[in-house]
Length: 79
Image (cartoon, one colour):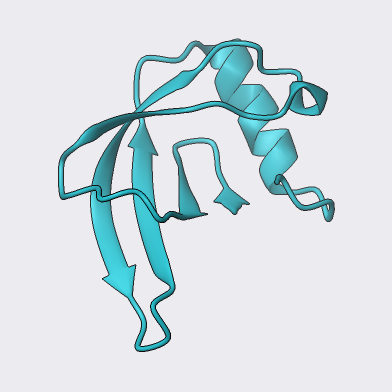
């Protein structure tokens, strides 16, 4: 998983389609207790079957956005 202040790149096996609403729930160690409301903005699928979903976050406050920005710059994987 790649994480940023405005969205994320996720490996997903779920049958999502463009513009589907999704909620991203991060592990407790990330210190963002609420689910992040998101929308699917792109989906890629490799020949190997690996599926990557790109989501855009919406509706979070500056505190959450700041925390996501810090997390996006850490070397520790998010998931």
